[in-house]
Amino acid sequence: MEYPQFLVIDASSYELDGHPIAIAWSLTDGTIKSTLIQPEENWTVWDSGLEDLHGMTEEILIQSGEPVWEAVKELEFDCEHPYYLVQDAERTMELLERMYDAYDKEPASDLIGIHEWHPSETEERYQIMEDLRSDLELSPYRCEDNVRLMLEMWVRVNDAEHHD
Image (cartoon, rainbow, N blue to C red):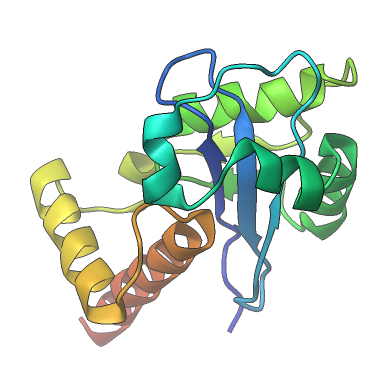
């Protein structure tokens, strides 16, 4: 089975000036890849209140994160479609653009938000997500878990369509 590709980027803050700290995406075979992102020198916004939720500190990112451009090159190499499916297209694009802006580049892929690829209404979709998250024991604060969640949602929608 070939899957669409999903993308999630975690940020240093919920604020607009937050920067990417981790990125995860899926391949067309359903494999999930992820990496921590080493902050650029001018990426200084950090919400220490989120550290307990996502388990990251600035020190971890500096020591273990991949340089931004390396993460971007790997994402582009793996992209087999001209788009990624995402939960929040606007916020994900802001963070993706911040990664590309660090090297005066433009994102090469379009983003399609969940409301466009998942047929259910917002409240129903939210409940499906929460039920799946609980069943699969996924964290809402880890980008790779959120990619897995979207993959599972897509599979269930497509299984239901094939059985109707």
